[in-house]
Length: 239
Image (cartoon, rainbow, N blue to C red; front, side, top):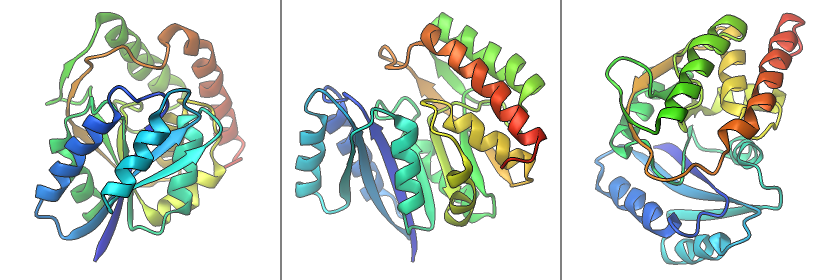
């Protein structure tokens, strides 16, 4: 039977973690899907009791696991868990469940139908988004101007935290990618697009109801640097 991992990167998520993990757990239990699944909480260097909550949930529910890393990086924890996994389809979503989990079966279906990567999209026609104005503006600049011109990814929304990837493709791509916090999504899609992997983009319902843990303004210079860095590496066949 097909095996699916759902990774939830978690850094200082104690306020929402238990509630949202149980929402996801109960949703998956109700699905009549022909695959085995497990939720893995990827706790990374939290200063609150996120790790303790992850351990408690894992002890109570056999399909919930936890993994700890001392470095506070979503990208590093995601790479580690995806590369080490033996499941057939590897997925991840943000701990705040900003993307409606009712779209999760669509991610799995897209991979089962032969796509190498499936991504949720807040910008594709049919998506429904509730988000503060500044983040909408920055997302549009990033996804509609910077990325298409400098580093094409083949999708309209490179950064939505709702993705799935075929295990074989993950093993091929991920070891070659960097570990810049927050840029893994874009780099993965850019390299996959350049190498001709099949990418499906699924419009989703997305609602931001809390302040993001990633600062928009602080990360702009880092993202611009990595866009150009990745473009140069692709041009010189360094992947």
